Image (cartoon, rainbow, N blue to C red; front, top):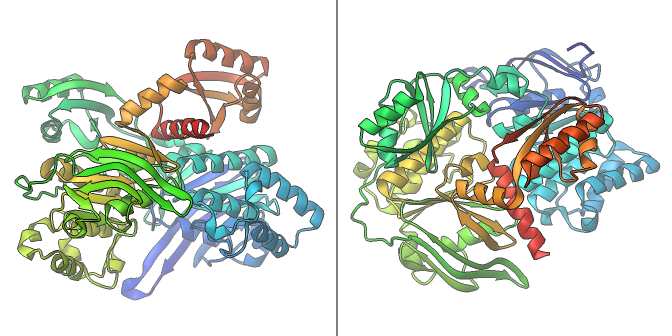
Length: 637
């Protein structure tokens, strides 16, 4: 970097514990962040991101290395740094006071920062306008949705308008619409005030919104640069294949030496390969599989992360149960006119839903859409106010005991007893389900749990703990498996392994899987998706069908490049008010791509934008989700 960096970290090191339990959380971390730059620390839980941010915020001391923020030595004078920064810790509204209202929280942070009244009133008005929290000033923080809590936390972080902002996983646990709003605020203050932002996230897709990133794994930076430059490090070629029958095609692909890795995304199989795609297709056809479609695709940051972490041979773990003769319904999940009210508030509003046997069904929706309430009713934890729910052919809650015997459940926090060992957790769940150990002991080795049998669940790596929790949830070979945000914070390698296991449970054992998630890339693994908003099921279809419907209704997506970016966006807003920033790109939906591409270029050229470019790009699930929810919101209004 040419100019003096605002944030500078050199050879940072931090460990926890002693002797045999010592954990090296941060190892030789070095990077710089300039003025007006958004720099992302990208990686899973436990990678060391939080420790780095806490060191730079002056709340954690590094044991070795150098750290400067705004010219101040963090390690020598941590208190001096705290006056220069806005720091937002990890967790939904972690810096808020639950019993205080929105107004009271903002005023508390004004007093904490000793902000003069004139500056406070000006900053408060601007931040409330950006976050649209003005109508909720008298609502207590504990009663806000996840997205609103994060916006309030951001106001409290920015109330003194710092020049350096440190954000620790600011969008974890919030829905895509709230994430989009959050990023709009961050990009605006960076563009308008040249604020420096350092943030961490476990979402690989959020890296594209940063100017530069560092991929972190096991306390070390494994790659650093712009998102584009890191994607450029990918080796091999990538493609998607649709073939029937899919399980046979997957097995065949795993036996072809030119295919380096495979991953199922709903009806598609994504492969990394060497050589000629046509030869791979021919080999599939020779093995009696019909290739419906194949097409090259560009690698993603997640693909690069996996290559950098491990380039070993593919693994294909499997969980298989003898359930072929079980007499359950062809539709193990059925909801008929299901309603749930809490007083005058209708949380679930007349839901009709059928999920086929062996289907992977994703339930998506904004915070407060009613997903959790619906799942609790399916599991028998809440009674519906009206309507009928059938699980594995049994009515819930009338036949609750027989229905719950057919249910496996894995919560976001893995449903394990952390002070018990792996073996003790398995023994406990087998006793609860009355399952003999001989019926599942053969699954311990394929899941890689044998070497951890004597370890406490709380001391396991996140990915291993996740596989143990999944095994505990399916020991009794249930007809239905409910997964509540099962891969939150899990690294891409562990997440990919997890979804291979889910695929085998679905395809090989016929277990019906219903998963709720805010991670939109994960939605692509599902056979079908149900989108919920304000308690209603507004759409249910395959990911590809939803994307096609969104394109038909709201248009193709254009990616627009130009510099300077803020000037380009202002120029576009004169003709396209809906244009939005997405990293160093401007996104625009259009029903007439050919005409609007020319109009965009004309506006940018007239504004003196350097080297403007326009590309048509595929819709992501984020784009699709936001379009459906916003359209539904407009129809509700």
